[in-house]
Amino acid sequence: MATKPVIICLCHFLVLLLHFALCQEPGICTSRFDYEYKILKKLHDLEVEIEAVKQTLYDRVSVAFMAELSRDLTSFTKGATVIFDHTILNNGSRYNPSNGVFVAKGSGLYVFHLVATSRPGSNIFLHVMKNNEQVNYLFLENNVDFYHHRSVPTVLEIAAGDQVKVIIHGSSGSPNLVGCCFHTHFSGYSLILK
Image (cartoon, rainbow, N blue to C red; front, side):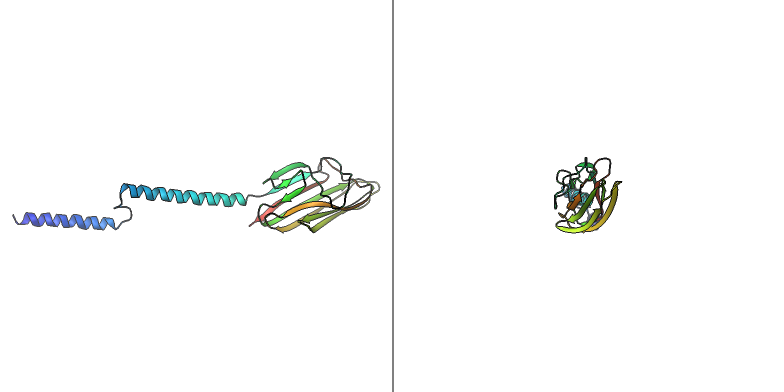
């Protein structure tokens, strides 16, 4: 009969030993509430991380626009912004067709392209401006018997909030920028966003 208490003690010892061994594994000895809490916390942390990645991707979504003059421009005031009022594309909504200004959402490398066409008898000087700094120009010199069509690309390093636009620098003769049908347009896109 002395073996029965020894066997019972040995069984208790083995149960305690097994319990101790299992408790070394993560999640085995936690209550159901602790386990569910840990799972919910991990899910919450993943949701926060996914939202951060989505925001980063949203902030880096490419920006692209193209806008043209809807009609001929015949009134030229030095320093006035050329308003390309007919928007063809405006991904990211960074170009404003009511004032002719592109405002960068994010910092990065951008490419802009100005295409202009003048009627005969025009001398027109246009400047591409980044904030208040001239970064490029386009000159349409006097033609007596045909339309003049020119373009100029501009590659710029831009910070968030920088503005890019086209202004009239000067004109002579009977200046006339041809509108409609893609004769005179301004476009741009983000090449690399930081």
